[in-house]
Amino acid sequence: MWRYLFRRINLFFATSLVLLGVLFVATGLFPVEKPTALSGITAPNAVQLEQITHDYQLESGSLNQFIAYISQRLSGNLGVSVNSQQDVAAELISVLPASFELAFVAGLIAMVFGVPLGMFAALTKNKLLQRLILTLTLTGYSVPVFWLGLTLLLWFGVNLNWLPTSGQINLLYDIPPVTGIMLIDTLLLDSNYAMAAFKDAVMHLILPAITLAVLPFTMVTRITRQALKTVMEQPYIRAAEARGLRTSRILIRHALPNALIPVLKSIGLMLGTFASYGIIVEMIFSWPGVGNWLISGIYQRDYTVIQAGILSVSLLIIAMSILIEFIHAAINPVSRKELYASN
Image 1 (cartoon, rainbow, N blue to C red):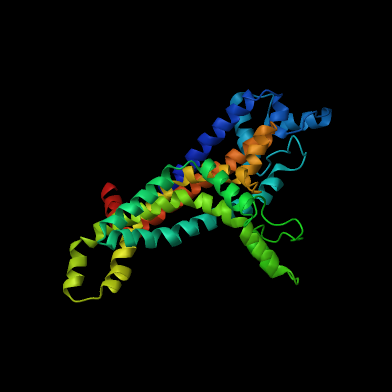
Image 2 (cartoon, rainbow, N blue to C red):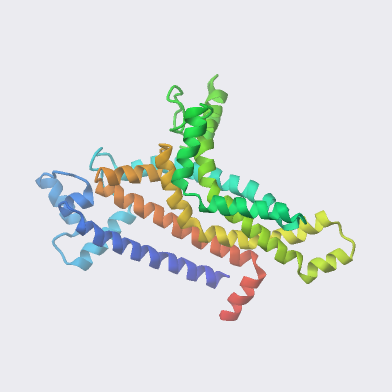
């Protein structure tokens, strides 16, 4: 397993190097002077221009420039925002927690509702219910996320006025940032309105989280159903039934853990799609996360923000995919057997 982990880490570094290479080439194609594209300073004076030239080795060859670019980006120097003239790294750190909060809650909703529904679809003998569940999941998978988000916003936010339509919390609440995750920061607030602020944060989270959860929910439901049906037909399950073990015990202790292994693998495969959907959801509901920040940077031609946003989102997807793949190989005996056979 350690050799496998070492190979995955090497893959992460190789993929990251290719990503940085693409960003480096794209930076030279931006319709602006290269010092501005690299640093975000729109009209650098002589001293600033000399510093940028030195930091990024602009008077050297392409290879030295690429090495300098990697060195600056990996050291945390992402430049300043072209529009706000604030440090891009600081802006990125401030918007990351909101994206993590939205993604975590959406993933939790998908697992909490998707796994039981998939189990029910696999175990029920009612063909009508099975077809109904499969139709529901197929419909949810096919619905465009932007249409779904706008529809939920219009119904529950505008027409019924049940839920907030934008933002992370009501601006009337003054919540000092501690973790950046609003659900946690409101609970840490030492104030009489802490619980009211927490409830307001939950209300703001419901619509975007449900919109983002639809895709993984449908995938988790369908894969859980198929995996559980396959597991329940295995010889060791039939042997447990023959020994007189209760169905609930067989399901919880033997069948479900093995059925969730393909679900874990599918989560790793859908991370890219999930991230792209997250960007759309953040735009629809004005959620102050990385996706909204990145799209705003694209609209405003904020080149340093574009580079930082693409770099951070891509590295997170790569890292999480490799982590999930490693966990899948660690808990799946079949994967370990194939892994050792390949070595």
